[in-house]
Image (cartoon, rainbow over the protein chains, first blue to last red):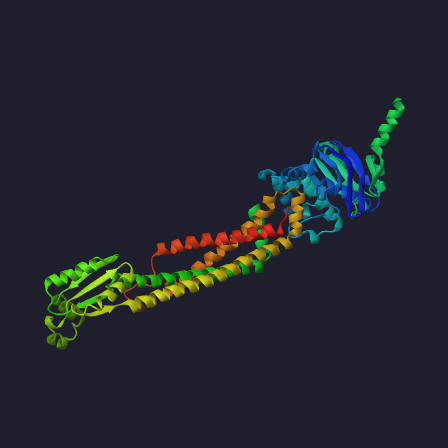
Length: 233
Length: 289
């Protein structure tokens, strides 16, 4: 799944959240979106999910403008995106297992394969023993992992992770990053992760788009391209 | 899964669900009782309608030609069901049958003292009123006219009042039930707004999100109407012998199970439809995508 932002601007009233941003994420890429609080990171995620519409510009997913797409098309796109929300967004009166089953049901996952898939993702995130608990019975780290389990369960083409390590201790943070890296490498799933944890960014060595006041101030992919062009010349 | 979600919604707010079922139960319970009562009065009315509704007693000493001309005139009215001529001898037979336990009276009465008569029944009671009006002035041939107009009018009035009262009560209860389901579904959607939004973000279709709420409305309508009908039927059958005894020989409370089955199916259909419509309006009002 390819993602492209073309001169996207988003204003909330007179406040400029995103200012004329353009970038492209190809299938299988791992991209960090980094910036201080209020820089527009979460707005980017919301724009991709069409939770909000851009004031101008267009967002292409597999070369189709998501904002000009029918609601059916948007639903299909969302079904291919595994989202890890900053505030988890788990259904409170459903158990962790039921939350995952709901996600699988939404994407019409084969019924017979659902139990095995639920077991598999819960095992991956280490929540097998917590499957029958409700979100209110889990710690912040466990909730984050439950959110990850739900995102992984649907075999997504792309994972959007909005500050997924924000509530995790160092050990769980590195476990999560290891897991995301594995999924990215083994299954070719694109990962777009917002964070302001520079330690992770440095350790992972992946493409990083830095945003400040709604503007892209640095895109390491462009930097690398420029460097290689300079070397060639 | 959608059915599971529907059941989950119902289970998670049991008092709201119970209120919805109760109000529909009440609507259909009273609806059924009004239907049974109205049908009972219809049976009474039918019974009166099938009996001679007007009796024209003739003067003594009329010749055969005059009697035949009266019969011909009666036949000329529209909607006449039956015209029966009761001769003096036949009148005596009827009199004997009615007073068989009183031999003293039987000894004193002979055919000569009893008048011959015409018993006329019609499909439309208005015709009988017309006959009574036209024959009353014919004092040369008519001795007396007995017309069950008052009984029929009274029955018609009662049936009409019961139907109208029933209609008002049922309409009011249905409106309350409708608005209540609408409000309950609205409340449930508001309570589950987060779940709806999360599901939409995960790619749930509009149908996927809305269907459980629609099914919930149907559930309330189906079970509410079913319980209402069951209770009303049980009550009617329980008191049927006393009520039917009172209205003898008329069967006021039907004991035919086909009759109850028909009403049962109609009410379940209406209840489910009401639940569906109310929840549909609720979903339209509260889920906007």
